[in-house]
Length: 152
Image (cartoon, rainbow, N blue to C red; front, top):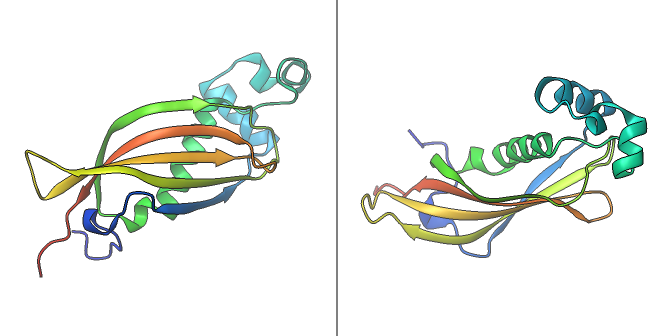
């Protein structure tokens, strides 16, 4: 099932940091997402967004979804991830503006073997997304269940 995976529970070390690559949200994408999922005026109208937040701002939920995509593309696709029991903490720290390049990292914060099933472990990830100024725009603590490397 996990034959093509690079990282198993055993391979992940506390403090290890992974680059999640980068992404950019266009004005059109921000408005499209807002219309569908978070139709607050400061996500839809540039003039209002500028008056309230300093510019047309992406929904925090859009930033979180983008962070998840970056996490999958640059980390989870390489991990024997079995599921996620959830997120402990999710913070929309600063607004994300159109066309501002974003970058992300995830760090292994904690890990422990499952008490009920020693073939998997719980890994706590600390994720951050930063804007082009290096300011954190989103931070999160997420949990994933990761398979232990099968014996040969």
